[in-house]
Image 1 (cartoon, rainbow, N blue to C red):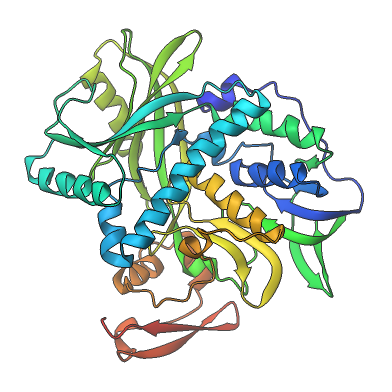
Image 2: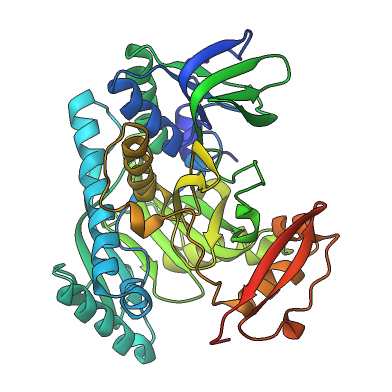
Length: 445
């Protein structure tokens, strides 16, 4: 089965593949929500924009999301305050709250029909042992000036013992939204090329040369919007994050269902939202995440979701099944901004940690401001060139050794590194694809 979003929009107009060499101001590699939002802002600002997409517009991660537009990224703000401080946490929250309004403004200004609906978002628990953690998150958010609520009534078809409520969040149909952005970009003389694979990016002098199998794009600026940066060096993003898979089913519950967006406070993760389909509301139930590459039988993924749906709604009908892969950063903050400190005019947005609908707009604003020479007050929060020692040493070790099929292990399969033999407050060198890469063990680890 395909995703709901792609099934409803399978007759979209198609774009041609790149068939000649072109020159442009900005080449955007990837036509998901981040790349298309960059294309919208930059073409509206008067720059010549060319978007290169390997498949069709939005047919990868964006077309397989649950499409919640929210600044509530789990029980996250206690972690941010404890790790980075109140000012940092408040700016992270403000950036995402502004992104919700930015998306709404684009929809209103461009008259995009994409089923945008304001909803409350809830992080909930049915475990009494987690209530204190829920209340702590509410207190932290209130101290940051955000009106989060502790509630015990949510609209879910079962009782909870506590939840954090964020009001005035939103949900939409992401492919309908991308269709609207596509029309705007074309109206602003932007070019979009689909079914065109970028094989390499090289900087020669002041220009970038973006290579495809038959043609070359020359541009002053490049935005890597390909979900996972395919240019390995000098950014080495493959070492700073991993991929996680998760699953969604679309369910006709055969009865009226309440609005609202929901996610569990801890594992096992279950996510709920409603969506419009054939004139009625259906339930999107997601979860069952695991690191990509780890074996995951049907009964532990779609099977678990289907059994849970039938427990809640015995007469329900499963209409859709889809899965997606998200980039997860080791320090839980996305990478947004310059691709590398040693390479100017190439930018990246990645590691959205399963919250790409909102974070994509944050990223587009930061990157577009950089290209347009504007200061963005939130850029420091998501600094893609940050070089803080990776504190989660166990996670790094697991990322490398856990699965022979994981994306990270493919990058490191020919290297040998014993983390335990690297002295504290010291570094080590590993060989990656015949290039030397340094790693550092923090004094606290």
